[in-house]
Length: 477
Image (tube, rainbow, N blue to C red; front, side, top):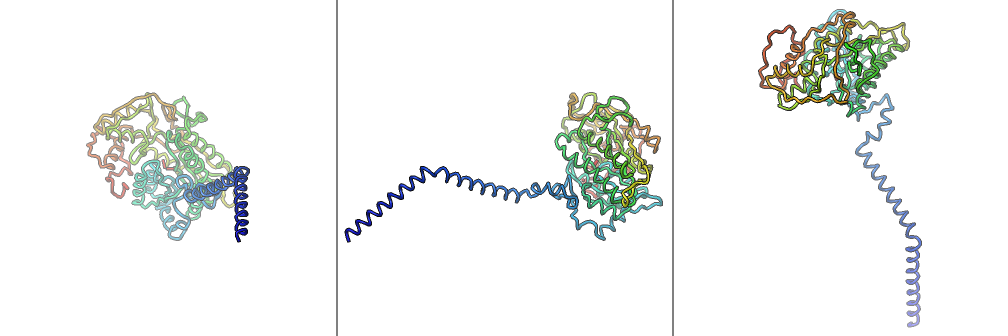
């Protein structure tokens, strides 16, 4: 027995010795290889975990390339650029079609049926009101994005609803929605005013301008050319910004427009070239309108006159560009120009069924301005007088941010073709704006009384206080 125990002890000692040797060999000869395998596996597992977490929290980013490539399934994750807020089941139904047709039906003999894009915007809302007031049928469309306070856009929508105009919460890049609209209603005209506005903001969000002003325009042209029967005539908003670095004055439609000073201007110039192509290929009647610094009640807060008024009231400083002059054009005058362009647009000559045109269709472009450039400092002085408060002014040299020193419209073509004649002075127009501004924001300000006034107050310049049905708010202009 003792000998057996001794033998077992020797074996155990040898086993332990061999195991230790083996471990030393593994440690010395294979440690690096084993560590590499473990590190590789850990890296793979960590990568898979990160991909899983990324997909869980940001599924729209992973699917973006697929959703953009699909025309039948618009992206819902990039609403402000590419999609409607309306899911497919919410439009195209019987109730939806009934509301759309009711709103689109003219109330006068020979009346127009107009689809207004950007109807929640400044110019779009005023034009929709004017068309409805004279007995035309109007259906609006707006995506109510947050470029500026959407409450103002919703207020315009409420004002239109009071007049019986339906404004859909949708986007111009929703191709399926546009198809359904043209299937439901034989619109005679499209007034395409939806756009991403603003010169300086283009430096911060350039893709937004391409998506709205270029892709959105193509989307509207595509739907009108290929899904509308009969094809409507289209009037759309270009911009005076297309004149860019042009120094000839006043700006004429015959002047060169190949030197844009901003991306915004470039997208509008691209739009004019795109309009030429769709007119030539599909026979769409297309009219482009180059607006010159439109202002007035229910305006855009990003515009100088509006933002200056707010700053003056709040006692905040305002920044002026030295020697800047603008051809300020009152909203009522612009609306008359838009309606005149619609009335004289002429017919499209293409067919959605055959894809062919029977002959050439009208292709036009017009300036809509006031023809009287005014120094921006003069505009501020008028606001100071009306608001009864001096502005804290800071004057600087004009930076290279896309702005131009002056604008000046020649409107002789519009005057000749549809009788466009602006009649509202800057003093009278700003008075109407300030009257609306004070009531909308419930300001305790007594507006200075005018000496004389020859301009009529616009129909859309409601003086209801904020919180009422009309005060509850593009790619809106």
